[in-house]
Length: 435
Image (cartoon, rainbow, N blue to C red):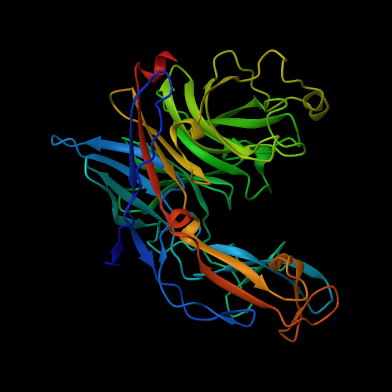
């Protein structure tokens, strides 16, 4: 069992917004991840441990008689960082990505919350039906070439994983244990409580066919009261005014797609929000974390109430008709912003976990610490350069705009606040279903 390091959570003097009765704040104790030694560019990887990321999603499990709350959190594919592009034998250049822990096995993590503390424990590593471990690395090259290069910190290109998975959403089904969104597929994967895969839904086989060939498209997962699973696609139809809500019935393996309107004038021009997580309320209604860069350049994370009733399935609609769709058209998902997380003292950059407690008045919100890792460039001749500005040549040297600079890539741990996993329990004065 890895050592666990507790990071204290300072108390913020925040006046409670109207309608909120109580806010409890925790810094979740998380396991520490030991990264392999190696180099990034010409810099040694600093010694030390990095905090596990367990906040990619959140699902409520149960409450003990002593009041202890039990949740399940989710890692993603593992710690990654921006990297230089890579030139191949033909002279072509592909973008790169550093995978800090190439052997990382994604997992579901149990989170226990008492009045005194919150901690993660009992990680469940994910494996396929033959109990062979899944990998956080993208799939191995199938001969058609990869859109980006997978790099180790030693600037070695990796071949990829045999059983790839990038978990980005988690839901508990009392009959079958877990459902997980896999961005690599894209796919919905069902797992036992031991983390062994039992069923998988792919585009055209449970998921909408229009998702075929769109790896990296799905995020978030919630299970509605009628058993349907709801997930989100950021750009399924190439629309700028909408995201797409996808509802899947795993029993019948049928699906529907609905248009989620992007608020006009809220987000930075040319950008759209992405969905952090969702929590079902009943009757086709659910709460959603929506986040991104606001119009004024600030970070905006907000809680949105959504309703699928009256929404029109657009999965079979002609593309030209979808391109003409407006936010005010009949049949789009009804949505209403109910809370800016900054108003309750939220300071983390990412909020990716959301769950509703049995009292139906308390929401749990969990941050993603991105494994507390960051990378920076030390180059006196180009002080504002980023890793993506460089090219890794075939001889293993870095170039910048055709020159060979004396640049160093430094991998380090983020500040204590940025490395922390925050859990907020927000209790409203009325049931959330009555919003």
